[in-house]
Image (cartoon, rainbow, N blue to C red; front, side):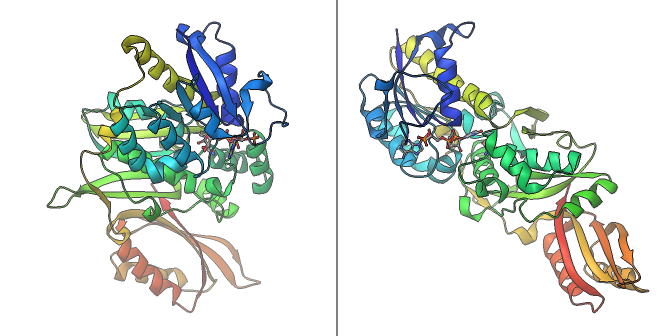
Amino acid sequence: MTIGIGLLGLGTVGAGVAEILLTPQGRHPLVGQLALKRVAVRDLNRPRPVELPAEILCTDPQQVVNDPAVDIVVEVMGGLEPARSLILAAIAAGKPVVTANKAVIARYGEEIAAAAAEQGVYVLIEAAVGGGIPIIEPLKQSLGGNRIQRVSGIINGTTNYILSRMADEGAAYGDVLADAQRLGYAEADPAADVEGGDAADKIAILSGLAYGGAIERSAIPTEGINRLDACDVNYAAQLGYVVKLVATAQCLGSDADGTVQLDVRVSPTLLPKDHPLAGVHGVNNAILVEGDPVGRVMFYGPGAGAGPTASAVVADILNIAGIREATGNGGGLDPLLAANRWRPCRLVDQGQTLNRNYLRLQTGDQAGVIGRIGSCFGDEGVSIRSIVQFEASSERNDAEIVVITHEVQEDNFRRALASITALPDVKAVAACLRTL
Ligand code: NAP
Ligand code: HSE
């Protein structure tokens, strides 16, 4: 039995998927039953890394959805529209969908899930988070018996690639970003990578799977690496830390009505060099899931790029194809849909969260400055783990002071910071980062 595949997009990921479908030898036998029937692109004349018969290419993506030879629609075009409408159109036509589009799923996952449930078709999203790492299916199924306490990880390959090369080679930010784009890691608009939005989309999806309810995507506190100063990466290294863009979703308890209180965020974070996420380099991603009773489980592998992402897309296609072969149709209710609906969740006020902080202050280099900074922290009950003076210059009478706090309530830290900012010795708060 041949299963017709329609591809919406033949860019980095789409071409990777086509390459697998066109070379089934040595792969799972079902791959040989998948036939590429129709492919939508924007520009028919653009050179492609895969050769396809000209007659299956088109520039109208709706033709792919409508083509009766297409049994499974694979959305790898990116962007919010027309991707969302095309996914909904495929579902309305009773066709299962595989998508790598985290931006759409993080914002319209509930709408898409409801439409898919009504039609009884699968919408699978393994490629949306972690590139080639299987993390969606494990969270949906394999870890289903756990109470998940925390999901944290490095889930943007582009920024991890940039940070790794900056730390290892002292490479310039702009040059490494250009390399990440050339290698197919970055989003069409790389602002989504470097400003943290892509990681926020992904942690919203993981949070929904881990805790059973959607959260407001736009309310996730998000900070990227675009404002990170290389000197903080350098100071962090001298203090025994590496800086990574970390996304976290943590359960802090529940309200009286059962609504789960979640701390979900994306921020550049200092990790002690022996932390399991600290050794994740280059385009690799890692997701650390902490659950009861499983303990800590880490998923690691390439987080972006044509091959790894196509691997995840094809796995989803094979899941649907396998069900189709076993049951005679590709229908059924994706456990994702059920998993996303079992309880309400909400984001907590950040002021109530507990954090360790890294702070870099530019100050005058005079007697008593460190003491006065220490008093501001002490007055708010903020305990200091270390305080170090870097780069003192008696000529300019200035110094850089780096403080790392113990775990403190965010409101207390912010009040202490306001008092510190008001000290006449303090010229600027040059950086304020999270620390694990
Ligand atoms: P890409 O290289 O920019 O490819 C997008 C493809 O979609 C191109 O072939 C483009 O056609 C086509 N396209 C876009 N809009 C279209 C429209 N309106 N009509 C017809 N065709 C259209 O993007 P990508 O990197 O493959 O990413 C695709 C999706 O996968 C995104 O949602 C992304 O977030 C996700 N993803 C990417 C990676 C990765 O490592 N790149 C990893 C995981 C998930 P042309 O080629 O003619 O321009
Ligand atoms: N731009 C994304 C990243 C692609 O760099 O992680 C994988 O989702």
